[in-house]
Image 1 (spheres, rainbow, N blue to C red):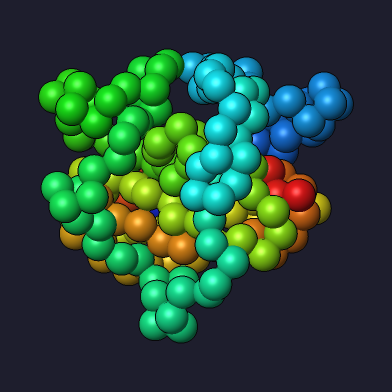
Image 2 (image 1 turned 180 degrees about the vertical axis):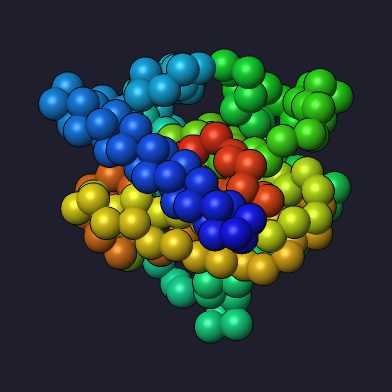
Length: 203
């Protein structure tokens, strides 16, 4: 009986999250595709000089994903991978309403909740744009060992569920494939505790 009740509560929680995110996505879609402000503490537009980032031009009002058009090896697709943050720290991390240099972020980050980012021209962000066919690293912090699931909300309203089994604590990443034009909203859970969600606009 407890197992059935637990499953029912989990499904109800997922449904509530889905309804909430769908409403946000639809509401934001009516505002000309503007993503900023879609959730409390949303990233502010990156303001700065236009320039080239990894061969792509970065405008002063968009955050472009750091992507590749070459698919990663099949053994790395749909797999949770460890990320050595000491060897390759990000330049900046979106946290507490702003982009913080890594040297500042790691000193204040409490590391007690799941956290999720997309690799972007601004650093690790909660939002980025990417062309169709791009492969992007989605970074995450797993606070403790637990069963991990990832939910991707597609532009047509469908939800894909990925189950990664037990995940060990630490920084991880997965490859996101920009297969469908439109807005993709993704979050993950560890022992049913949700992370923040990230938004990738695929064009």
